[in-house]
Length: 251
Image (cartoon, rainbow, N blue to C red; front, side, top):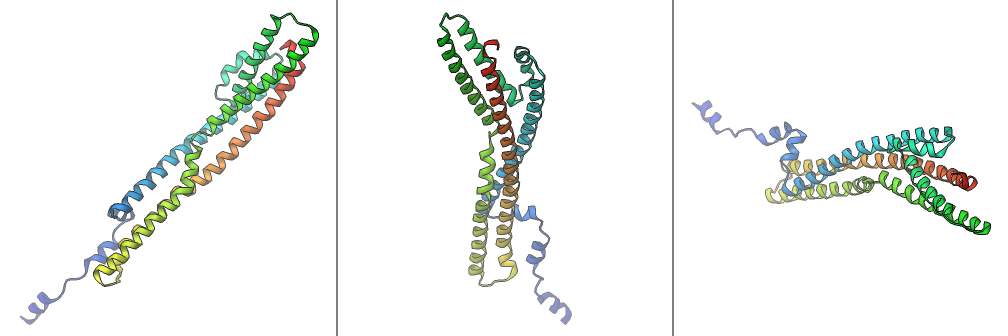
């Protein structure tokens, strides 16, 4: 009888800490407050989008470098630019190939215009110099267009790398604020009171870093690859201009 009364009067064990200890990271994230949940969704979007861009840009820049190398080999092996111009359509994914197509079209148009004119030798020399400058401008314009294609969405990676840690920090601060608010409401600072808010804060911080670290690494790597392509285009443009300047009449 006494044992039965004592058993009935005994307080039940606190289930909060045990249940909280069995919660996984996904459970903690889904049970976060409204503001922290909104922060986590934003960070998840940035992370997912940045990974999609990273995969796409990796293959795009890699393909551009390989195709440009193949075109450059064909350019130096070719003995006639008109034949190379016919084959350059096979290098649509090559920035060097597209720059060559633009420069050759510009030079060909100038040469056709010269053949329709009857001018003196001095005027022809002036036309030659002006034609080379026009080809140079066309090459520069094509180079900017090709580099612009490679740099698409790079600003998103830069934004992800710089902004997501601060977004995660906002979630951290808000989670800690929730912890202090629970302490004030319940008048105790036990682990069961502060743990949910702290977990929200740590998850927001971790997700912010998880989104920022791959973005900054990929951004630096891609910028290095784009710079390599840019240097190749610059060197090729200089060689092509020298070729145009020496053989402009026979282009």
